[in-house]
Image 1 (tube, one colour):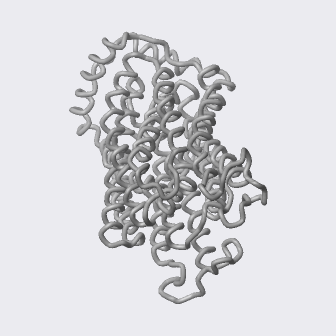
Image 2: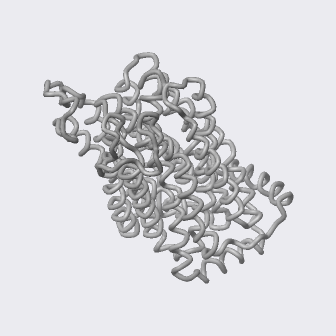
Length: 464
């Protein structure tokens, strides 16, 4: 692969002259800014609300959400490696983050119009969700590509883990704000903290759940500013036209040479499979809980807070283990925990544990009072604790394996493999759920994904 002298010297200079601590902290705030989209919309508040109150029933809601996630994932897969290659040649990262961040803000804001019981709003609502998903995922590609210029190689794992932990903390705070002050039970009219919803939000029309869309956009706009203001970008090296031509040329060369990079190829294939499973697990976890236990927004949101807390500590600890043990071992351990947790979840129903009948949750019972709910809560916390290190260590391993002068291009391929089949998990879950009318049958497909991902990861060598 051809590397120009100016690009090689530029990378070397960037690695020898790292920016001050304020620049690194400001970069970390991107994860804080973006996380509410995943916490509030895709997992714990809006997605379950869509499945249980906008769609005709939870199973069809899960299927529709899966199809929309799949379509967005396909678009991200097609766009990310090309854009990454262009960014490597043009040099700049921030303009791309700004452009795709705008899609996140616009798409999220439009989700306010998802009124309960109005099936006519489902197509535009899912389109808005797709636009926002494309925006946040592609902005993340270019944010990740800034990492090698911020800290020495031996601190990449800690930086990645700290970013994920900070993101989880932001997700926790956003979820607390929604549950404590905005979203209320339609039955009591009170929030989790016992307050009347702020800003006159109507519990009956679920305005507390719908406000998560605009809130996500406002949150991102405010908290991404430190990164734009204080974190240095790579300097511009090519005009967009030149970068487009050179980027396509080098992408073709990279794809042609990828089979010779056996560890990189095996890692990208493994990432393709286990990321698909993880995204599907987080996407449908709240929907599954809503359908299985009949949890409302406050119950699911409280569940989400506990998961995010476990995820914060998991990501922070995973970052330290990453630098000490290597990212591959962290990824493998995380996948084992996730696999065992999914198997256990499939053996728990609202009135059964391991095929043994138990008392189901009482309709007006205390929060997580039933044994099955508490077990699901523990398993969810294990998933949260393992999910953060898996994602953080994955981007660290990519940095270890990728040529330093093509880091954005390889992060594009990383996003490609994380998204090229991202439609497969949601599509399979949606299809199986639709055919069987069983949420449990749809979720069972994730076991196969994690087993296959673990087998491929075993072929990766970190010392190449």
